[in-house]
Length: 332
Image (cartoon, rainbow, N blue to C red):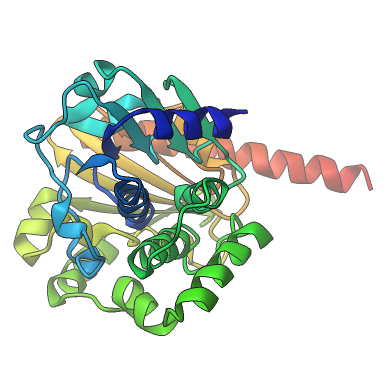
């Protein structure tokens, strides 16, 4: 029903503002570019927005240089399409403009989505928002260009950790197979671009961040800390933090990986990754949200206080997991 409603809105309106979340990733950028080009192929007027600049590793995607980071260029009296955002606050400076749109189309795969749109195509079973866009374009019988195919492949591969996270499904692989087969994409080249090639400042920053490693809860919780000061000292960019949290989660025996980023003296961004713990619930207890195995929150308080609060909640989540395992063993 919702897909049909959204298709009707996409066909009805003549112009669109497409917006992805702050600190955009491969899924949000790929979805933005793919849907944007598809709408343009229908003769629609389209503008693409994200509050933070596109990370350099995605600059090879066709159309990435057309994504705007200011409200200049916003199309008045146009429908707004919000991609990969659980709530409007995730769009940053564009939230008010979106609220004033005649129609808001919300397309997302986060379980914590607030269903804020005029129409909401939210599928938590989808591995990526790009997967939802793939099947939406198929339902609309719109032709795929090579640029759309590359954008959607990047969306799928980045949000599944190169198809190795447990959110990867048969549906995800079917979508990727169509893109690879029809457009002869080279997964080796595309994967190297986004997963392997890193600038030297990334490694200088990584050395500093790994030096902050802490283990808690019987070595089942691993925490790393980064800060603006570390970025400056390393010559690194905010985008270089992408994926660094996995160095905590990937330690053998660790159930919860945590990454603190000290954004200011009174604001800390926190990321969570896990093997078996529902970190969307953990993040939710701290005012955030996300996926079962990948989530986050932002705490507006000093690092020391934020760290204490986060570790306390993480220990509770770990205790709940171990308690459930104990009950399961006792019941056998």
